[in-house]
Length: 337
Image (cartoon, rainbow, N blue to C red):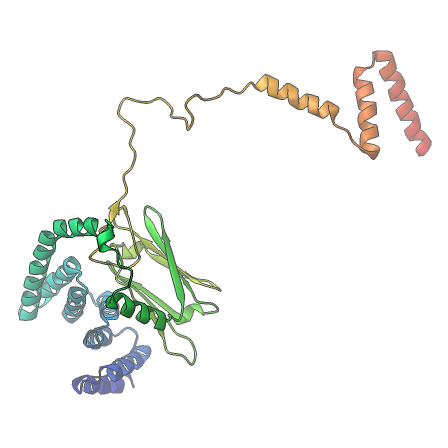
């Protein structure tokens, strides 16, 4: 059955019916989930539909199932190149080229990666200056009427409403993404991690699948990333490669990372550092005396107050009075019996 679906998927792909091809490949994968060729072929269909994050996810699955699959490395390299992940693309293509040295496509794409990497290196200083200059607001560049581009952007953003809301917060070493999807079973959630890619797929009965596949602001360590499906949300933890502050969740060429600076005390200064200029010394003897005074002056009601009254009398009485009080207490207990 899986073979029939694979054959029909190939025919649909040849006829440029890429969405149908993906549906057929998905059906074949459900029947043969350990077939790396199915994932590699579905990755190519995703590339044709410009679903590059999905293509990377499929290529990674194919590589995991068969690390010697040159086609999977070609798909991953192609998709990462489109995502402007040139270093990642080059690394995948170089592995594929070593597995299939006769395939000239690897050489061509590696050359393109080198060109893009060189361009990025040359453009980076200029971009940083441009970003800084755009942050300066002057009366000349403030307009009372929004531009047509802003109006178009606002119209698009107001018309689009995502199926599930998401937000993120970060720590120095990780980013935590929360997708507020209530009542979703764990088996309906698929999460994949790439070098700078997050791919989330949520399936709901009777509805189209929800995809959240951003290109991330910074690089992550896929093997250290985790996710957890809860009753009201899906929590995804992304392990950062570098200790940088993400100004947004998704990558933008106009937003450079902000490096966290760690405050290191100067060498040779081993004195303790206090949050106040002159640390206050605690007089523990005085503190104990105040506690005892409070206990003595404490007023109790009922039996507790009466017991405290007799304890104080007994503590301050002489020996004869204490013996008399003890004898009276014993006699009272025998009378009660």
